[in-house]
Amino acid sequence: MTRVVVLPHQDICPEGALVEAEQGTSLCEALLDAGLAIEHACEMSCACTTCHVIVREGFDSLNEADELEEDYLDKAWGLEPESRLSCQAMVGDTPLVVEIPRYTINHAREQH
Image (tube, rainbow, N blue to C red; front, side, top):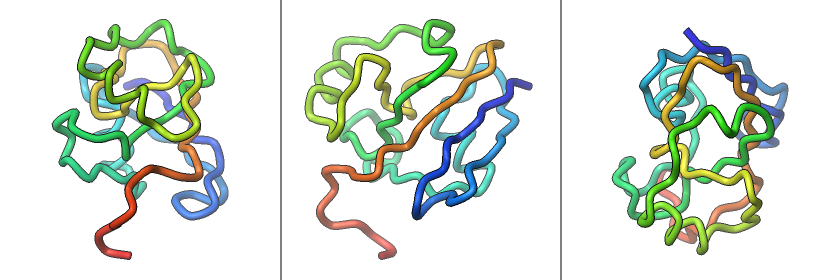
């Protein structure tokens, strides 16, 4: 299992969180399995940017983003060089520190 530290997010985890993720799972799946309600409007099919995260530590240990993910990332709010779509970032064996941006471009959030 790989340790994933989630930095505090006002709505999703105000105190931050520590998640144990199985290698080979997507970061989005790991966060959801831990009870963190990260948005994923396209159901993790790499068709939106609502699961955008910024990987503050361990970025280089993740699989490389493909062209489709890169295209969607260009549309993400608050894009940074270490940004990834969490549905496409596969957890390896290196601990991660991730930040969930405060906003997404999803204007019609379900369940809110």
